[in-house]
Image 1 (cartoon, rainbow, N blue to C red):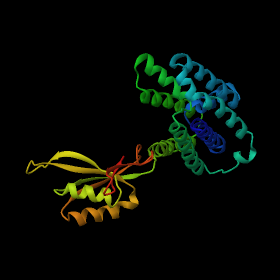
Image 2 (cartoon, one colour; image 1 turned 180 degrees about the vertical axis):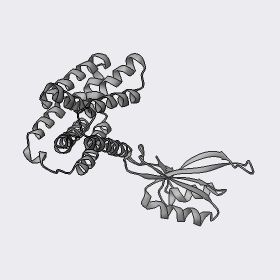
Image 3 (tube, helix red, strand yellow; image 1 turned 90 degrees about the horizontal axis):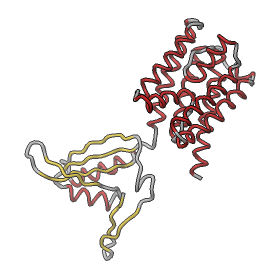
Image 4 (cartoon, rainbow, N blue to C red; image 1 turned 45 degrees about the vertical axis):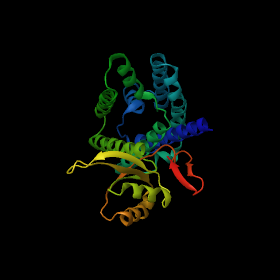
Length: 295
């Protein structure tokens, strides 16, 4: 079931990526990176069919990656290698997509959003879109060249080759699209069920801990600290809660110790017991029915 869900996510991501390119990038002639960018260069200089070029490049790069990086790597990109060229080929032959809009600014914005969303979805499945992601990984393994550096250099060269035969607007809107795509990609990768992390410092830490466990059913972790001015050893409380529970927890803290100091920070994702795993309880005192939350 888990594997099927991942494959479905990879398929959705590759479909969205192909849709964004077919509907907004290619009709407006926007410059772009990756395999699609190289295929645009091959189409211009050698009159090569774009769909065929994408197929060939994806397969060649996949075989290179599988040979150098091994079977485990190949399994993470094989779905994208097989499906992205197919989706792009199908969508490229739908006339309605080619005339969806004639506005280059609108095309750059939507292409950037869709491409960033698509690649983010694929990466969150623990997979890769393959293509031009593969050479930087090979260079990193063989020569220790940083992946990010190779990616940027590769994309810069691909964009530069397209700039030689593109007009100024195509170049400027293409750069805008890349910026939007990068922003959306980062957002998608960090996107999760956001939580709040509280660190509570109080001389009444034991009472606050008890109230949080018993009254709010909130997990708590005790941290040994030393106060800055008096250099007094004591404990602080760390807990993670849903945003909607901040008021409730704050009231418990202030009621127990009005002078308590606590900070609140937003965290992007939480995994583990009590969040992505089922919450469990231990019976501390069966007679009094007291329970300790295990998170």
